[in-house]
Length: 271
Image (tube, rainbow, N blue to C red; front, top):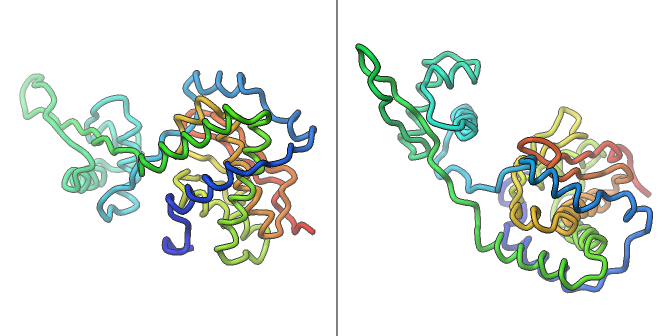
């Protein structure tokens, strides 16, 4: 899927705005009962689990290898030397130094001399330069819409799930229909990537780590709404591509650095 074929954040927001204004019938009782309690999700978020905020992409044509070094550098608690980063990356220091020089030249990392200790020139210490959240206007308005449905609906989770499903169906209709369930799983992972979730999937694309969230602040306050919209989006896209969704689930704030999307049931054609 090319970048030109996917939805922009503002196109997605326009659909989200429309969908949240629609009165949607309640979901089946078994779907409501199977959903986690809001308190359980919030407890995991408070413990520091879950994805990072969606960040703007690097403004330069950084190579994939340099981008991986940048991601590792951003994960460090403080400035690090080339040797320290090379050890954590499992690569030769000269390779890491080359990528760090590129990142510094591109303005994505900074460096400063470490304090002098004994003879010799002090080592360079490297740290990532903070990047702003991507499209803060989109995130802010979508957050406000999610908070509105949480305040005004008698069944916010159910309505959010249905709204997300309609949204996902609309997004999927703009794309080519995948030929197989496996291709549909691949396409839905790619779709999540265009929307800012930074997905990392296993080889079969049945277990997907969502490492960023474009609505993280709202999700931490109203996970039963925001996370339900995201799950509905996935289900709506798969259903539009005639792929089963029976065991498709989303575990918000499941582990350090990610929510977990399970696509185990998306393995056959639906009627």
